[in-house]
Length: 305
Image 1 (cartoon, rainbow, N blue to C red):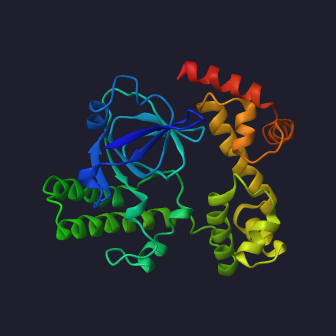
Image 2 (cartoon, one colour; image 1 turned 120 degrees about the vertical axis):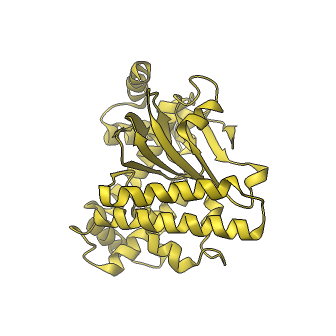
């Protein structure tokens, strides 16, 4: 199923790596099956994922934490977790839920099996973490999960099987995308060009935030003026590009402080700060407390979950 990577920060990272499924890059299972593969209490520990994950709750209720947000899940709740996010499972009796793990390589920018135009149309970057499916869409999306599971059980490794399962995955993702887009109908992008600029900026930021903190770098790489990038961020998020950069760095700092045993100095170094004191000032400004105090507050929270 997956492998565990203990990095220098000791933030547990779970990756999609199964030699039997390397060519396919898709693995469906139930939450009960997932729990059966791991030691007791293992899933309750925070983990950074290196894959996409779709989780559909069919019966029961539970809480699922993604990047410090607790989502209360009920039948019809659909969770979307993307690579790099930190999630935490919470045990719940009577929970019936299906999930699909997707290797990022299964969704390439260009592929004969999954055309780039189809992938771009999904708008994965705009998906929110959790939505509640209306009854009109719940059965169809649950049926998509079931179809993938049924054909996965017959998977032989052939190119036809790979194509079939990837096309079924795309069909499921399109159904989910339709529901995700319903959330944006009341607030559509005011300017398509600015929205495109924003998405390109966010994609580049995700790749280089740990080493590049200046808006000038991103604007130059993208070929836009700094003001154009900032206007795009104001249109999409209601805050400047500089604030978007700071928020991304702050999120990663919180992840490392809460879920790893890296020292404050080590976190500062990982996030591109030349001096720990500069990082402490940055963190206090963004979080309203010192890194040490934030870590202490999160250790108390973890003890109660």
